[in-house]
Length: 86
Image (cartoon, rainbow, N blue to C red):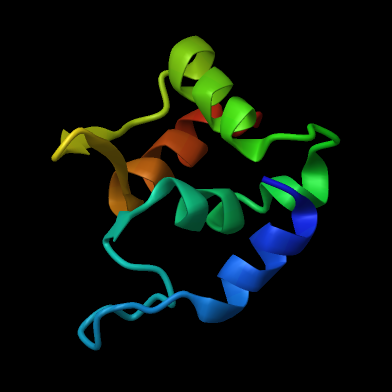
């Protein structure tokens, strides 16, 4: 995925009305890429490789539903908190 596609996905995402965040409680990989701002901080050509690395090497939380990985927003926030250097 290129940066232009990531920016377009950021502009077209939707969330449930009950969610206070613009991101849904269960994010797709594309939503996660936008949520973590990977296009802004990575020089990788394929942002999905960045996510795969975070899953394999840094234990990024996810669930599988219908053979697709989804990323619980609250678990991702907790993961970010654990990764934060203090």
